[in-house]
Length: 121
Image (cartoon, rainbow, N blue to C red; front, side):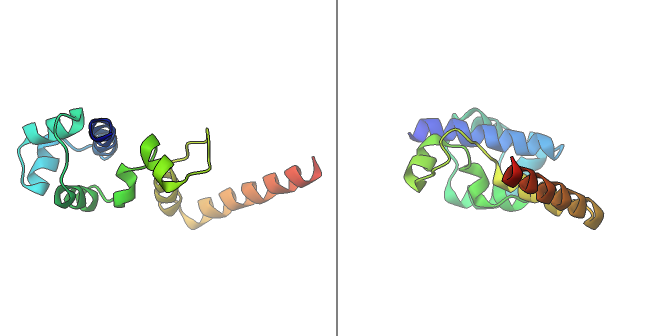
């Protein structure tokens, strides 16, 4: 499980780093490691200590749970009942939070309209 998690965490780290447009060097400097260490984290070669994980989550502006999302063994432990639905809640939360008030109102209006259709149909 540990090796699988290291690979999973590395993928999540890389995804977030790239989505923010950061280099491995920038991330490495922020948490006081070499860029080679970030490469090893991203490949899953090296595990990430709890202290480093906290530093990464703070620098990348994601909750710690972000690194555990979508990890099968974590879902089993957590008792996730969402069988095949894999929603990335932190992504949805961040996206919604970054929207303007007008955009949020439009999304909520769409969701309200959709739920009305479901009740009828």
